[in-house]
Image (tube, rainbow, N blue to C red; front, side):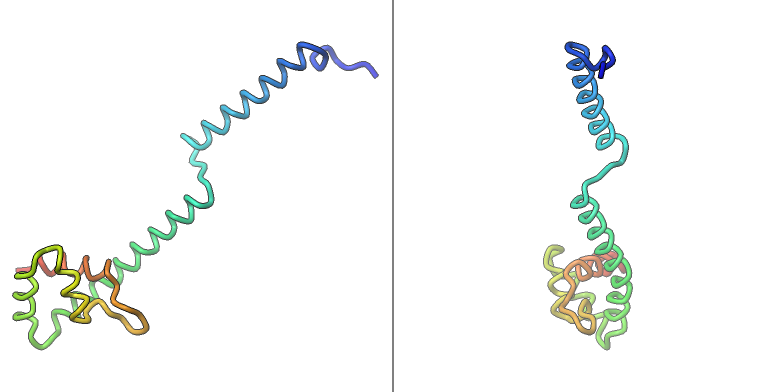
Length: 120
């Protein structure tokens, strides 16, 4: 069987080099600008979004629990007296960032402390 000239000798080498270069360019363009991602990166992004959504939903509940406490004004003054980097621990220890069936959520406590720290 006779092969076409493009598949013989030096032409075959050039064809394979072109195919390899084209595949390489497609991969680079796809991952850089095409929006392609690896499964591990997609999973990491999904986990971050889920964590942010949980914090966004639970933070108002934490603030509400804090404000409805019997001695809310005194506790708010004590919270504001704390260093800003210790306020999340204050909220966690107070139990306002603890929800049924779980341990205190540090991210919720931090967001809750930021909101309460801004109140007057």
